[in-house]
Image (cartoon, rainbow, N blue to C red; front, top):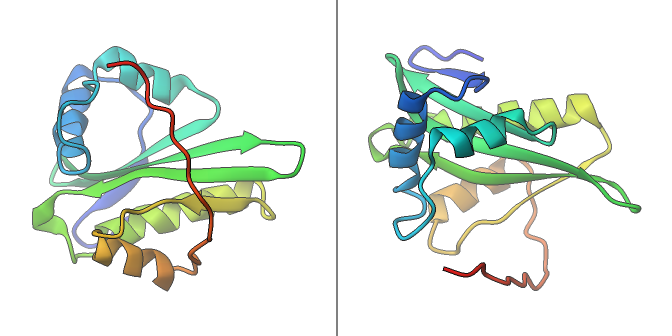
Length: 150
């Protein structure tokens, strides 16, 4: 997908420079401490048949990303959108919306009846408004989390 300013593509090669750019981008979503995004970690994501990593690029630089996870349960085929993030200087230019639309397009192409989920912290008001404007509904649930050992 292309916009006048930026392009959206599926990341297919785990280049060390790309891993570094994405790791810096993740600082805007999940500041340290967190696992660093190394080339090896990026390769695991890219090589998974159940994950698709989308990036938004502007003038050869990664300015946004989103991961689409797919899984199947006895009840349904499901998708989970994770780690939607854009650089602060491109916010409001449609980068997040373009990433989201491309992920939705791919999910619907794979399994039209699959449900797409995502979560968003209450303080991310602009992101939450974006999700609502694209048809996502707030789903009343209790999310439980068991953190890994640090």
